[in-house]
Amino acid sequence: MFLTATNLLAYLTDVGLASAADVVDHDLSIVELGRRNRNFRVMRSSGASLFVKQVPVVAAETSLSLLREAGAGQLALEEAGLPTLAAVTPRLLRYDPRHHVLVQEVIPEARCIAELLLRPDGIALDLVGAVAATLGRIHHESARPGSLARVAQCLGGEPPWIVEIGTRAEALMPGMSGASRELVDAIRARPVLTGALALLGRTWRRTALMHGDVKWDNIVVAPTRDGGRQIHLVDWELCNVGDPLWDMAGMMAALLQIWLLGGALGGDSRPGAQQAGAWPIGLVHPAAVCAWQAYRSEAGPLAGGAAPAQQQLALLTGARLVLMAFELSQHIERTPPAAAMALSMAAHFFLQPAAALRDLLGLQDTASAPWPRAEQPWRVPAQPHFSVQETMT
Image (cartoon, rainbow, N blue to C red):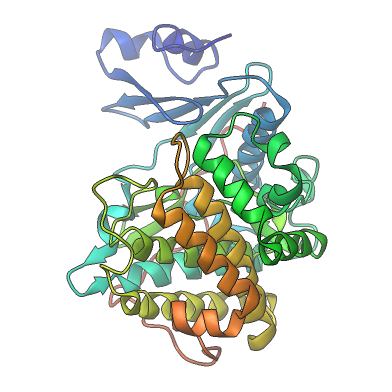
């Protein structure tokens, strides 16, 4: 069944997530959204609004990504030992493997963190710290033996695809753009890039549940019932059992992206964006230090010793910058300056990890320093606010 704005209501009615009364009372509107999948937002003035996702093409990769997101949602509903995951993921209402459809509850009044992150005096440290602390708690809780057993079949522990870009680019991106082709050639011409990526693939850790795609587009902020605010993580299609520091590397790369795009938070290289260097790199440093301190305070022993953990963080940040270069180069024919700079920064992280952490992120030995918390604490409830009514079907 191929979902459209016309037949979606019938589908939701058939599975018990909508009713004829929604139409009679004019209490429902459907908006089709773009992006990688077929996405729909079903808005209701009374009752929960819905987010519906269907893969555009049934293939092993797209089907697995939807299954993984459903797996994260099932864990949030059913695994008592993962309260942070339950608090910050969209509530799973239905997973339909036959039609490759996922239905989640829309997070009320959620705003993308990108709308709130930049302030006149720099990056909002309370927001950055809250995101990193949330990641640390998820990693700490999910590292408990047996906590991910119920979804082991869909979380295979594969390293991120970018570690194979030097050897399998054509298979991984059969329809790559001209700019992506240039990036592949540039990576293959620099042994430091191909060698470091391959090494990360061979030594990949499988320690905890990682989101796998931490970037500003996948983080939202919503009010809580008691007047506070809470971080939520969306789009769990790339979640897996893996190295928890991959998520932190995503955060660090996202902070560096602000500098690369001249103070912009967009996910592409828009022609009007300022050049790298127009926004001081020093403004990234307090946010990176805050994020690392907050993460280590919540992840605890999972993050390892200070020096080894920072070494691994540097290498993974380099890999995440290579991935970012491709994200900045989609659907265009020439490599944008920000993507080329991201590759150069990645090489710096690979060749001189300690210097790169210091020069680009302001990180030295920050293991024992406190992180600046918001005056009004961010809420991560010990138990989710909802009860389990439906599970994966």
